[in-house]
Image 1 (cartoon, rainbow, N blue to C red):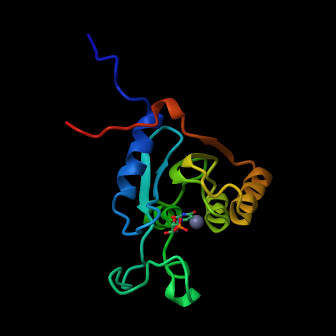
Image 2: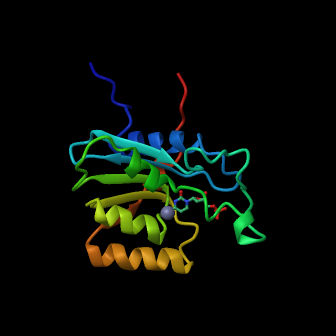
Length: 159
Ligand SMILES: O=c1ccn([C@H]2C[C@H](O)[C@@H](COP(=O)(O)O)O2)c(=O)[nH]1
Ligand SMILES: [Zn+2]
């Protein structure tokens, strides 16, 4: 008889997003993303990090101070990395599992790539203009978004 306590698709793909986030060097917010086709095939993954050639030991990770001495102008967002890491050429109709609600810039890229559903975990910046603008664009473009079911929030990885 088959096992019945296997994880569902959402837990599986959010688990991969969470594991990807563990690769991030950001000391404050680790973000992971997993792009999945309509038929539940993984298309790409990504996490927030410095662009290639920009050493994550040399570029800043601060949040405050002179803008050029903070991480913000440099760090490549998890969703953008997942889009750029995609080896195929069509992700229309795909979904993305993300550990943090996407910013306005990532929302633009997701819309333009034809992503149709966003499943996110944290929405800790919901009150910011960046996320309000992001939701405004996603709503206009008909991209659905929903929070990952909190009942399954704890994803334990062990053998
Ligand atoms: O859509 C997004 C928004 C943010 N990120 C990354 C960028 C930064 O590395 C962190 C946010 O850092 P804070 O210290 O919480 O401001 O998250 C992302 O990957 N995708
Ligand atoms: Zn972003």
